Image (cartoon, rainbow, N blue to C red; front, side, top):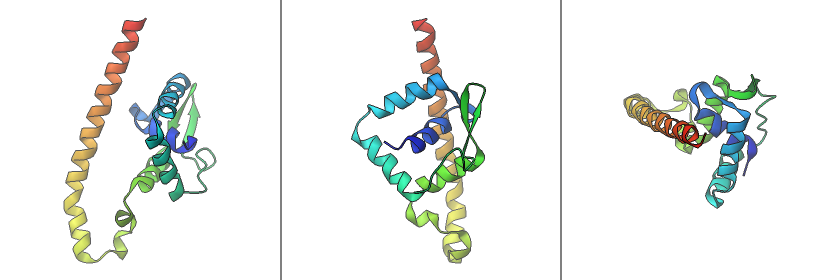
Length: 134
């Protein structure tokens, strides 16, 4: 499992990209024990940016007992997760592909919105479980 990629993935799932250390450690432990799939996925993502250093590159900042992903960190994570065909810049893409990309944007926005809603529901369920356990 690639630690730095995992940290980025965990932080991007939290509101405002901020998580306290206890939550980070818990989520990291869950992912570390989730099996080979996660380890292979993080290796693939890390291979796209072999010199990844989340702190010195300003991708993650330390704050108030936790860590927060920066906009630069979000952008790099999107780059790492992009399919090889999506990694080209718009200026290098033919005009037909550029217009197709603009048409796909609402679809991508809807997908992100749905993911965001799922993450919010998961967080709410996690908080309810914590409250019950207390």
